[in-house]
Image 1 (tube, rainbow, N blue to C red):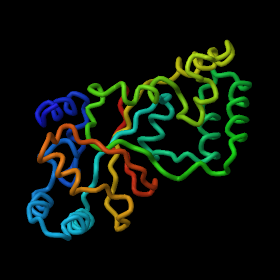
Image 2 (image 1 turned 90 degrees about the vertical axis):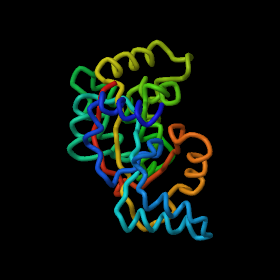
Image 3 (image 1 turned 30 degrees about the vertical axis):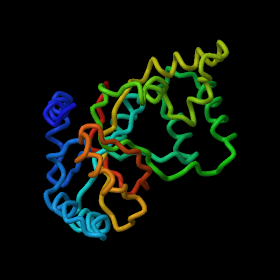
Image 4 (image 1 turned 180 degrees about the vertical axis):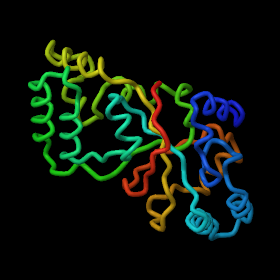
Length: 234
């Protein structure tokens, strides 16, 4: 998609107006600040550091998406309280908050699965894709996350790539009947920990030499640096 079609896509989804002048959408060139492009053009040996400093000092944010499947309760909760991490306690709370149409015996079964995982905390990180956020154009890349409710730690219990028991199939039908494929639009807020920054010089090299609209990276960021922009149903 070109800048024009990407922007139209985001307008159609009702999300474009929620972005600010500080938001950088990697695959839409017009959202890159002129100051960053000027630093990149310098070809100075420290330009990567200077780009990161510019982003931090100007409070720039990277826009990303997380593709998932959510209940109505979860959609409202994420919009109000933000995105959750993958720790065991929050995963168990996620299961407990399922609608009453899901039998308690199924909830207890899923909670037992989470408790059985060989780790006390899965992580306090949020995984997201930044750039190429025209989700309809790349659905197959993230389809697994929108097909099954619960996130990988939960749906691995009842989805086994076609080898499920009838009971596991029933669980999948129940959970997916009360949930919807969604995109969570998020912004990764700037901070002074450069470990979480991508290689901007490499990204700009690719954008300038090839096509900005194809730029996309996967990021893993601590939850404290994540802000939810909106959640939409696909």
